[in-house]
Length: 503
Image (cartoon, rainbow, N blue to C red; front, side):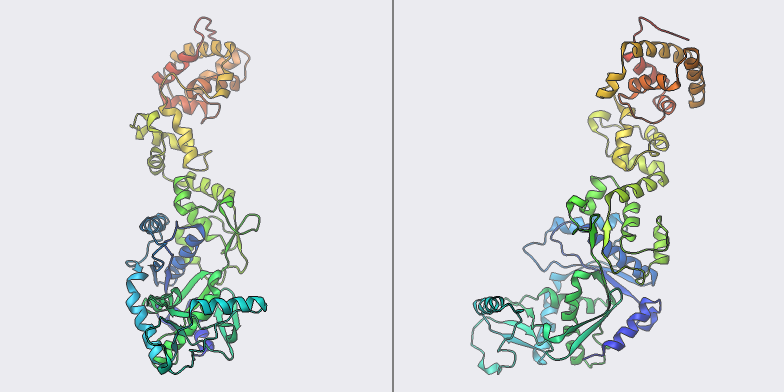
């Protein structure tokens, strides 16, 4: 069996920046396509991506689609879509695990031929009875197959069998984990797990080991729910290494880094009630920007001092495994949305306008969006928005058609006195020669003072008339964005022209 200590030393060098000690760094993200790309998977992909980039190595993708009943093409497409949106596409074409089944079976045959595995003829009924007995006696159930050391000649002809690994029974195994530290398990706790099912198909445990080896993966960075799997996987690695010469050179242990899982803000297991959605939902439903999700995921379990806003370039420069915490991180959707608000303010207006245009109701726009107008509106809209949905909602007034649909609160503002005031505003604004924010503000201030009103008393009914809402960008920005003619038409539609009160 290969020396754990020697493997740990080489891997620790790589984690500390001396990747040359074991060759170039290669990481992988290997999701199962049985559903959407969830937030935990996206963070795992991000950490693999950043570690590889930081060390100048490769970041690979593998689709673990051996569960044919549950793996679907839509799920595969959703995973790639989510990864590409976050900028986490692989450096090479993805590997599909099911397509490599023959290679996995080949390795199982090598283990069988070398005596590191055996054909087990225990039936499902026999296994079930032994499992029930263990439960009744309140002891852990471990596979103890009489076929492990049986004479192959005694095998029942024509009977189905599985191929099991011969796990070590004495001593203990230590895995030097880059996040968890040294983790030791007594080998007596390991059982002879299945490599090939009775139909000849490989199990996940075998396929993962073979694929990681063949892809040259040097660092396995994944959730700590896989930590127990690592002890089974090194059994295969060390058996294959012994077959091919030993000393950990041909089938070396990768460096393992098992990351604590993400919990909800209340410390409970992360669920949809905490905001745990598919990555596509953060984009499509919540209207978040990829750089905000990227930044937030980075800070879930990893930190760089007090830095909160971290660009992708800085992340590559700073990322290391040493600063990944051992405790579960807590997902807070409110913090993510606040971070997104920062990135909205930093984003280019033309880019935002293109994203917002897709969210505008075609019934509102008639299917045609004035992109120049929408782009000019971004600087005033994004100041108070947290996501693209906010931006789309804030921009809707620009494309509304007369007569405007009135929000109930806006309708309540349009009292008879307010409508008379709108008539006076209409008359005054009709006389304005300069339709700029500064000129309009100066003019309405003079009007407000002459009537003994605060500017807000003018702005409230004016906002309702112009937007149909009680909340909008600054009223002078609204007037400028709508333009002279549209602004005056909207005001006139709500004004009581029988009693203008021009000041």
